[in-house]
Image 1 (tube, rainbow, N blue to C red):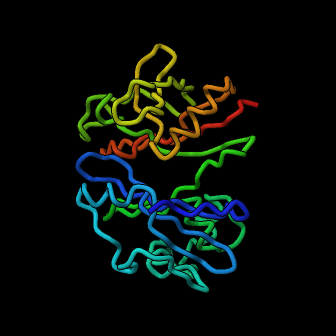
Image 2 (cartoon, rainbow, N blue to C red):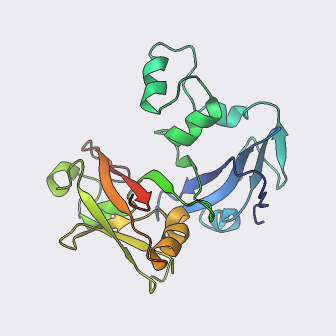
Length: 233
């Protein structure tokens, strides 16, 4: 089932599941905000099922679901709007008031006990792109295996990174490698952005990509966040 493309409404998020074994990302659904909120399965969900994923309990059928409010299955991933310190959380994500959908978009809604996140797509007609994301596969390329990350990871906040297309990649012909200036590889652009980014690189568009966040706590799946801007200026 392919997600229905509504060219009049680009206010939607991909719902992405990461296979905990292969660490491959699958776009399993789309959450849209319009006159109503809608959710539908799409893109990779059949492939995800082959990898062991199962339909979400809140959405047991292959159909378009509608709701006047943000689905509880998704809003439950967010902090209570009345919790202490909410102003600090909103400030962190550049929000002036509580909006569950926008908070999902800004924070990705990632929880420590599952492998889902909500991703703001890059649309073909976007002239200026800015997205923040974690490098994929970094634990493999720095060789830490998810352990002792601080000893293996020599990136620092502000480190400039460089993008290299890898068209012969067997898993993703749009794959884009991420390297330092001395050609040391640290991982890949997430697969849900690879086609959009590689298309722009093929056009010769300028970009700037730099490290904005590093977590040395030991979880190398999400330890380096970068910011990509296209074009550079």
